[in-house]
Image 1 (cartoon, rainbow, N blue to C red):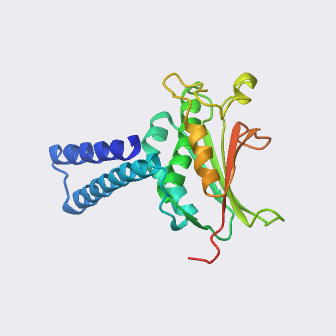
Image 2: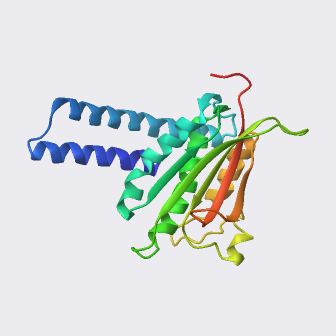
Image 3: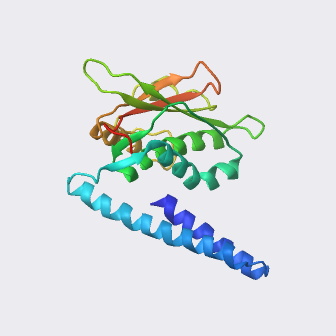
Length: 224
């Protein structure tokens, strides 16, 4: 819920600032107010799906493009990244990206992984490069699984301590001061419910060289 609410606050504060500076052009205000309305509907939809999830009903699966979910998650997390000077590098190598999914649930998984990276990078010295790299690629079908699309999120932060690494997906295990230790556990459950996997790959051997997580989602049978 923090992402849409923070976006609403930022857009509203931007409108107030423009009006005070007498630079409130109609088309700029219309775009900002439209974004406020969009994020309000998004918050309401998150609440609706959280209630459905609590009742253990099936999520709303529909054809979506994973690349669009990644781009929207990056937009929603943009203010946090810009505040601490984080550079994002994207390399979407999958030729197709159509999945059948509850878009909000998958987007929350992406946001959680990005936020974990951002929090780690924010604690680093200011002169240290702060980079998040996001890549996608196709995974061929096997005897037990169909064709998948894999998303990998890697940052340039310090390695995860070994004592935490072995319990990353355990409940209430967290390295964040205000963390609940449920984000990765819930994220893995969401991905597995969609027929995929969420794994920690360790520290990447290629740039940016820090902790790396990846998740897979099956392709939709037919293109959108």
